[in-house]
Image (cartoon, rainbow, N blue to C red; front, side, top):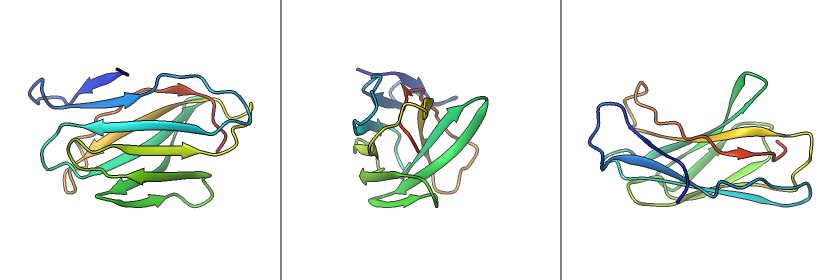
Length: 124
């Protein structure tokens, strides 16, 4: 299993999982999976952290994806409890290293994000 993080103030059974904990090389496509076990959370957000900067890549709400403009990613799958959301970055370039995070969110509770670190160097 990949990294896990429990939502603050939630039961131990409510968590966000992200896999794989891989390092990719240039020219590859990177696929990062995220799922959660939190009832009524139906949004998964994807972030990239590099050089002390956190960038929103986009998010998935239920089964619809909303990538940010100018970001070379796709999101597939679902964002509800026990579903799998997949972030795909095409044709990785060596200059695009970063730590990638997924987060789960309740549609009206912006303050409850659960971030998961993922070390990969895909190019955005």
